[in-house]
Image (cartoon, rainbow, N blue to C red):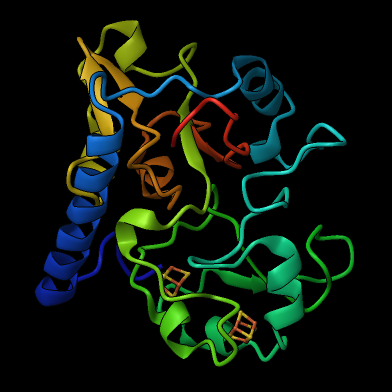
Length: 226
Ligand code: SF4
Ligand code: SF4
């Protein structure tokens, strides 16, 4: 990857504005705490324990909010629509300036020939080039604040902030505004309304292995909002 964040200041400013707009809207719908707790806690626990980021199996019947159990590039349609639309042309793969879009091969998980991301190994800078070049609409042009690749989750056993140390690496790496990572004293908390699952925080985390990982976003609960 050539850098952690887009270097073009105009692109970065536009990205922040778009994210801010989307978040303002979301905040109107969900007033109160910045931390939305409408996720199925037991499912999250299972997801984390399954070690998705360690490349082991997810619960058999798990599907994320887009009907899949792996990560697609920004703007990817719901999985069945995506598979209908995507022509496997690989234009997104070629366009990605960070070289973080992979073409699935046999055994990788996603259907062979389709593009996917590995945000825990190679973060996406949310530049939007892939959505721009996609000729079929399989990657729909989506404002930065509405991109949902996955969601970052903190591992409290090893996170330096949870060990009362002063570390803000994940917060500083987050490209969004408002920032998706807030703190409870020194402990980082991910705001699910804001996080895109880009993986920049994972790369920035100084612990080995990282104490923040991107997991697939579970489908929203019926009562939940974002
Ligand atoms: S937005 Fe698309 S093209 Fe840009 S870094 Fe992310 S995956 Fe690559
Ligand atoms: S550019 Fe669009 S159609 Fe081509 S491989 Fe990527 S997602 Fe599929």
